[in-house]
Amino acid sequence: MNADALNGRLLFAIPKKGRLHTQCLELLSGADIKFRRHQRLDVCLVMNHPIALVFLPASDIPSFVGKGNVDLGITGHDVILEANMEESVTEVLKLGFGKCALQVQVPVGGSAQTVDDLAGKRIVTSFEVLAEQYFSKVDNRLQLSDDARTKIEYVGGSVEAACALGLADGIVDLVESGDTMRAAGLHAIATVLETEAVLIKSTTPKDPSLVPLINLITSRIKGVIAASTYVVCSYNIHRDKLHAATALTPGRRAPTISPLDEENWVAVNVMVEKKTMAKVMDDLVAVGAEDVLIFNLDNCRV
Ligand SMILES: Nc1ncnc2c1ncn2[C@@H]1O[C@H](COP(=O)(O)OP(=O)(O)OP(=O)(O)O)[C@@H](O)[C@H]1O
Ligand SMILES: O=P(O)(O)OC[C@H]1O[C@H](OP(=O)(O)OP(=O)(O)O)[C@H](O)[C@@H]1O
Image 1 (tube, rainbow, N blue to C red):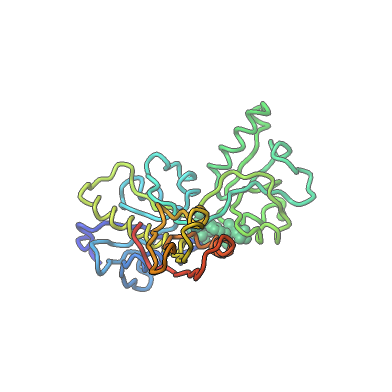
Image 2 (cartoon, rainbow, N blue to C red):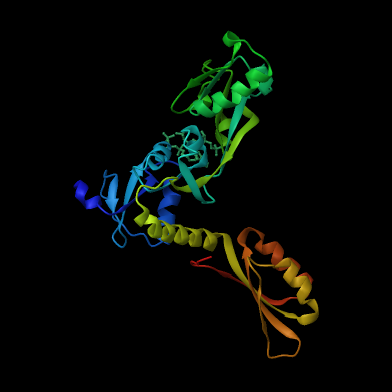
């Protein structure tokens, strides 16, 4: 592909592998962003919009977006802070996946069991900026002299092996289920930050003519996320019990209430968070709702 092929196209950075890759592809598909990626090619043209996708390591995406080399991107909130790009990029939307926590971890039963115990010792991490910021506050609080301060060492992966290998007294790494940490005989003693995947754009976009397309993609992705987060609940209820039922199902804005062809009965249609759906149905039945139905959403604009 020659560089001219990208002229006038919005460049959208997507993690090329790793934990965020698959869910990003699902988002693109839900937003009807169609493309065919040739093997090993990291730039590809979108067929139905003036967009080119750029597949990059998640950790490089904040600086590509922040410096204006690409217009839009998906990456983790953690890597934006690690790249010191929080001022240069704007987090447009939280995406609800890639949720995990950056935590300080130590060997179970080891000599250091608190953050203060670890101060002045050796920490191994892939997040050296965030670990340095975190431990420099601890060191300052404990008034450690320059040569007694915590030593932070960078490794690119397999951070969890560092303590067993004798390279570290503690690590700072991401934890989701906790399986990796437990398998390595570690446990968490502090949380540095909570993170999830976010849609980002440059704080100072180079090309204002791209704003409508950025807004369109944002709105589509928002719709895909809402469609996977919410279901539509419909039920019938006597007017006397309506107040109690709508208190359980207030909806995103307000429920739709329509009269039924039976005196004093109404039908209610309302969006409900998927994760609360079973409890909401139980509670609706308990206050007198009948014919409670749940519908999945294929897509929506909210
Ligand atoms: N276990 C996890 N659960 C949820 N999200 C995660 C998890 N691990 C990482 N992430 C998120 O995904 C981002 C990318 O992490 P990932 O480990 O996939 O990196 P990567 O770019 O593939 O690099 P590498 O494969 O070299 O480690 C992280 O910065 C974080 O936001
Ligand atoms: O709490 P868990 O669910 O076990 O997840 C945590 C693990 O996930 C991430 O690594 P990943 O598996 O993406 O591979 P990596 O070590 O190559 O980055 C992270 O670095 C942890 O090792």
